[in-house]
Every structure is written in C-alpha cells, then in structure tokens.
Length: 326
Image (cartoon, rainbow, N blue to C red):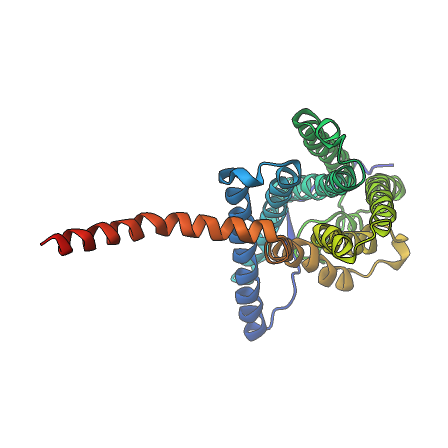
C-alpha cells in the first residue's frame, strides 16, 4: 500500500562507477571511444543497407533495424553517463529518469523480437527456400518490426508507470550508472512484490518466447544443414548464420543473467558491470560482427569505395589523353 505522507523526490543521484579522478578520466575516454564506435559502426550499416541494392533483402532490413535499436538504447544511457564522469554531482531529474527507463526498456525489448525475426528469416531461407518470398514478404517483414516496437512500447510503459507510482520516501541515491528497474525498486519504502513479479513475468515472457523461436529455428536449420551431403555446402550455410548466433548469444546471455534471477540474488555492483556489456559493448560488437564476418556486407563496402573512386580514376584517364593529344 502506498504511503500518503511522503515527498516525491525531484531528482535522483547516480552512484556511477568510481569517484577516483584518474580512473574516472580513463573510464570516460574508454566509454567515449566505445560509444563513438557504436554510433559510427551501426549508422554505417544502416546507410549501407539503404543505398546498396544488393542488400535490399529481409535479412538486411532486419539488420538495419537492429543497428537502429543498438544506437537508440545505447544513446538512452551513454551520453548522461559520460556527462556524469565529468561532474561532481551525478544527478538526474525524476522525469529524466523515467524517460531514460522508458526508452531503454522499449528498445531493449524490441531488440529481442528483431533477433527472433532474424532467426525465423534464416529458417525460411534455408529450410523453405521455395516459399521464402511468401514467408518473408515485405508486408510480413514490416509486421514483424511494428510488432517489435509495439511490444517494447507497451512493456516499457507498464514498467515505468508502476515503478514511478511507488513512494521513494528514503534515500534518492541510485546505486547504478543509469535508471534501471531493480536499483529503483530497492529505494522504495513500499511493497514491491507486484513490480518484481511483473518484471520477471514480462521480461521472462519476451526473452523466453523469442529465445524459443530462435532455438527452434536454428534446430530446424541444423537438421537441414546436416542433410546436405557436400561439406562445402554445409560450411557455406552455417556461415550465413554464424554472425546472428554470436549476436544472440551475447545479448541473451547478459539479459537472462540480469532480469531472470530471483531478487534475493541481485548484486547491484555486479549488475553494473554486466549492464556495461549490453548497453555499450554489445551494440559495438554487433556492428563489428555483422560487418567483419559478413561477406555480402564486406563486398558492398568494397563496391561503395570503388564506386566513389571511379569518377576520379576516369578523370585522370581523360586528363592523360588530353596531354597526349598535345
């Protein structure tokens, strides 16, 4: 039951990582570099997919949305974290905290569904190639993306509304570097069992259902690949799925550890370290994984570079021909 005689805090103070100045500057520079790589790498993938005709396929449509989500949920957290490294008072307003949680939860949950859609796309392409144009039509792909953003929006609204209806009548110091749900629940002086149950239920449903889709899709893919007689055909088919499997393992491993544990096992200091992985490191790794391990993306980059250099090369030839004429 909510307390009636308390004053709602106007701001929260984020503990962050450390107050030791040399380490603070080091972490600021490291995280700034990682965040820059995240934005540049994922934005580059989005632009490449949209300007290159050979990448106008369902797989790369989902990949461009995945890159957008990586930029978005990283941007919801990182800029404020970087600013706090340079200030002595690491504060965030009540509404700023709510918005940060809203966008982060929305984009993170949406990413789960996009990863599941990418796994289904690989299943359709490998196991049902003749039906692939029907199974993964433009309309189906758009419906998958709309469902992802809609689901993320609904779950984030539920979490934010229930969390910020709680009374925070004690300390306003959040033992984290952003406004995540568990550390805010720890500050409330009311019963948070309903919030914890909904956190476990909603996150559990989205993560386990999408993980089930991914697992079943790749199980069917494995059966199909093992039936291919040539070793070259098997390795080529596996290589088309390798990048996605690595991204899924990294993303789901950290999320399952963070949100599908009993609340008694939460350790906020440990959670801060794990949170860095999925807010900063994984978005950067996704861009690297899908570019460095993907032959089609690398070929598209080469063609874009050659196309850019072609006018200069042609101009040089014309100039040489003019000089020879004289």
